[in-house]
Image 1 (cartoon, rainbow, N blue to C red):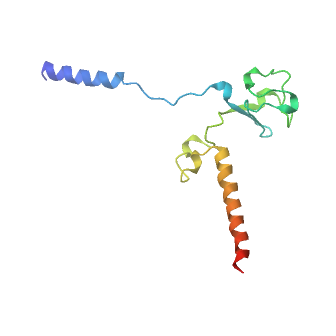
Image 2 (image 1 turned 180 degrees about the vertical axis):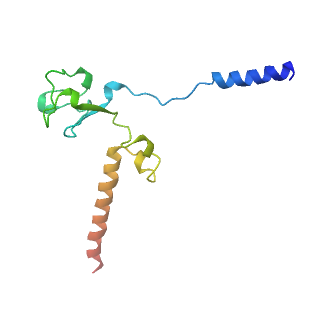
Image 3 (image 1 turned 90 degrees about the vertical axis):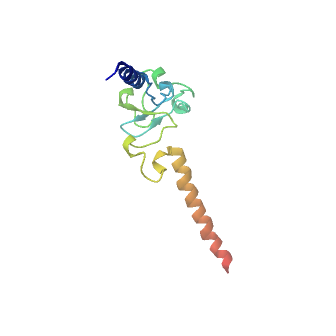
Length: 132
């Protein structure tokens, strides 16, 4: 191999090594929701917990681990697990590419799809009475 070919190959390999690897943008952990593993209650920092006087905007990390309990089942802070931000799609990561795009929807979007479909079906059912 000539020196020119070696320099071209080394330039190509250095370009491949130096190329930045794109990673998914990390969300702020203070906005993540936490789910109680005992009962399924979800603590959302955007909502807070009015029942026990926790204002909206209070991150889960800011809660007192000694005094905070799950409002439903009274479990301790250790019973909660991080389920990510509100905009994260629900379900297992490896299953997000299946299901005609429905698996990439957030829980709120899925609720709109399900209950909107039910309302539409009910409206069509009621329209059958106009066929008289």
